[in-house]
Length: 329
Image 1 (spheres, rainbow, N blue to C red):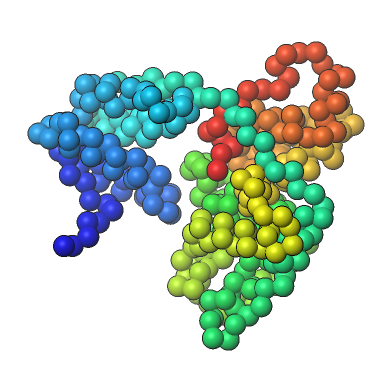
Image 2: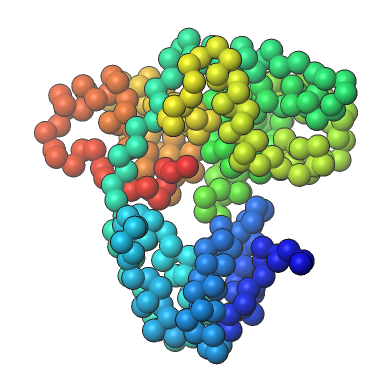
């Protein structure tokens, strides 16, 4: 029996869903559109409950958006969010009059990222640098070149792992040391200014990898000039972390290098006075935060600044509530 394609839809709304996903991909999503998995579930729900319906109805949306017993507010809000995008798409094109559902307020983020020690980071990058090439496996030779640079970029820039994986070669300005990030959690573009040492490392990497793949599309190309998967990042991080450090916990992840970047920056600003807010604004822009509150979340995670906060303010809301949407894995 032929295996069904992941992009197949079966409900009466299938043509609209196909068009919506095509639109999302054309808008800038290079990986499978984040809506695709959620829309497949929605399509199956419509197929089973409204098999003969070819137009979106309020009844469909009301039943679909009802919070389930197994859901948190955050997971329910994210599930509804996919449908909100679909409804907006159809409304703009005059294909539905269904109103957007109200999403529940997301749960406050309680995640505490792993606090890297200097020794742990030294151990990790030493393991990266000790990767050996295998003449019988060309892909492992590329891995030896790519992995040390990829993880150092995460560490030194605070980029999201997805942003680094999907980075195109033409988005890295090796002359001025600026990365243009267009593939992020949203379609909002932002810029990352590289440290001089990281810029030099990227120049050397580019020169070497260009000999192997002179016409590559992605800055960190896989064997077939595609981008690396999220699984590739996780597998490499866990393997190299475990070589000299203790086994990774759920908090010791490649993404935690982004949190480390923010915390190290904020911790170095103590005593800067009025310049602090300005630097915080620049940090948020560089990290691609949509709201300053997402950057301020790191106040509570910064060792030196936690004590300073207590001394300069008695306000209860000095540490803003940050929800799981902006700083999640």
